[in-house]
Amino acid sequence: MGVLTDYFAANGAELAKADERGVPEKVAKVDAKGFGVIPFGQLAKRLLGKGDGVEPGQPLLHGDDYEWFVQKIVPEMGAALAAMTDGEIAKHAGVLAGTDDLQWSEEVTIEVLARLRELAKKAKKGKRDLYLWCSV
Image (cartoon, rainbow, N blue to C red; front, side, top):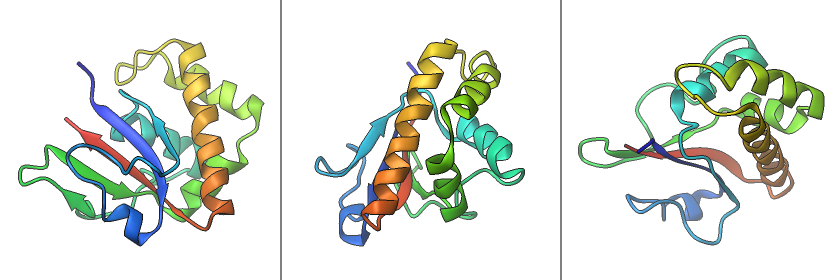
């Protein structure tokens, strides 16, 4: 079983509803089971040249033993995700797909990256922040 991972766009009130069960039902989200913190960080290094794409420090929300947590995606990463072209998505997917931390097909990786791009665009348009929810 992989790490359960959702990426979502939310305002403060919506964010507060995230918990061990996941993210609020009515927010824009991408179910990306397996594309957790490590693959996302690898993508951030490719897009930004530094960092892991999330705010440093403790998660914003988390379970008592960190069995689930929410991290805020830095605005620069959201902008980079929204700006990815189809060609860039294919290029990054080709590199990330076969890594030990992901082990997905290139096609599945392309699909998830394209969905993350659309989520980032929706977040920008709706003036929402992007977040990463994980449950291990």
